Image 1 (tube, rainbow, N blue to C red):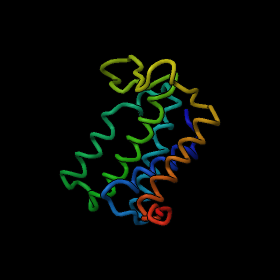
Image 2: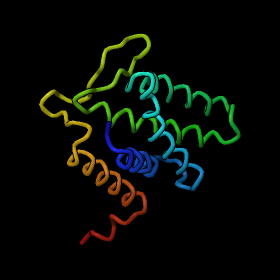
Image 3: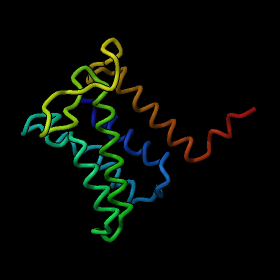
Image 4: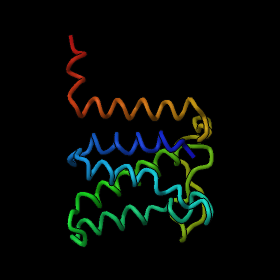
Length: 145
């Protein structure tokens, strides 16, 4: 798995490039969504909590207005998706369709798959996340000539 730091940064980066507000509530939702999938270690990692069914269910909860702030459900789903995507490019892959299909899928060709524990990969995720945040804040305009 990518480091907790990288998953957290990436979830916040995804929030920053979304159309959702970057306020504290949504920040916490995205951060939680980026970290919670790794709580499946006791049931078989990258299965139960790494299925696409969870972010889909969270989005449905938001659409149906089951919660008082649907944006929080969206932010949580967005963070969850960022986690699945970052694990999906690694050598191990993710069982996206679990429990219907136990196959581990990959989002990148075999030669491009990093080890999820790679410091280079985790550093790359953090840098991408910082870039997304800078873009959201409009700081990219500072670098234009």
